[in-house]
Length: 249
Image (cartoon, rainbow, N blue to C red; front, side, top):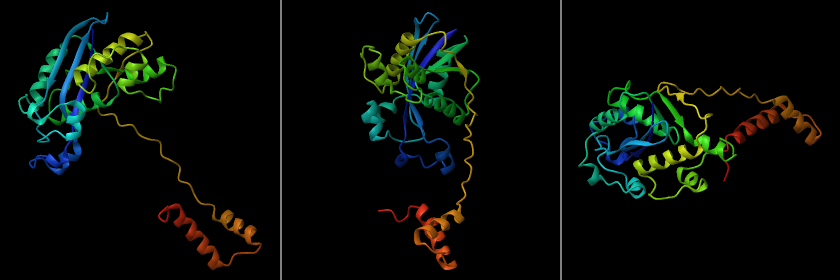
């Protein structure tokens, strides 16, 4: 069995959205993978292989300037690369047929990987279904709430792992994630099954009702008299309008 520690870089630039893509497709898949970086580890955390490929964009014709500033990836650079389906197939070969577990920093990368493969109608069965999201385990390791999630760079700094590469590069971020995994691993860190079709359903919030009788009674106490029917209607209307916050400055 192997651990596949991977990271992705994305691009999103609606100003350069290809005209042949419909509005439905645009809403269905707003992010485009432009780099896949991965480290394959054996059970002894030894590096078996490394994967690093950039992706020629087909959804957006250029890389957003913010993304270029963040990752140093340029449009001109990506135009020389292979399209996603070729890079994806190479990634599947890198993963291999041996049972593997994905290791990630946050859930966005695994979600977008499955989403991209589905978007291009590529084989999903060859992707590992088990994964470990290391981000909350770092919080647990540090004794802080697992709801307080650190960025990858903050985790590296807090764990005193040497910073030898820049961040926001898929291969380097995969390397740092692997180093974190090695440092905090315990037998309590167990993989989960990833279900790309799972949608988290938020519990329905109970609709609150306004107790108008108590509201009017409060005004009776304040003014020491009964409210007329017209005054009661004005109070109810004013209360409703106040809850919309539309007159706040």
